[in-house]
Length: 74
Image (spheres, one colour):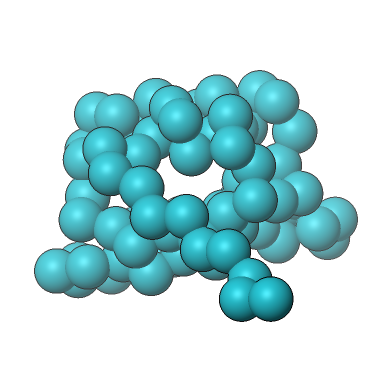
């Protein structure tokens, strides 16, 4: 399977398991634009409680209600 296919399977498996809080690390990584759009629509519809780590600022802007930015200490 491709990395994108593996990511879709992992996300689907995660969402089939009921949880109070989902912890996802870069969920849109390896997904093509079509599948990213499907994920965004699903998250908007279901609105699961989620802690999400991602570098894709555009994705975060669309799916996150609140955001915490971490910066390195110099």
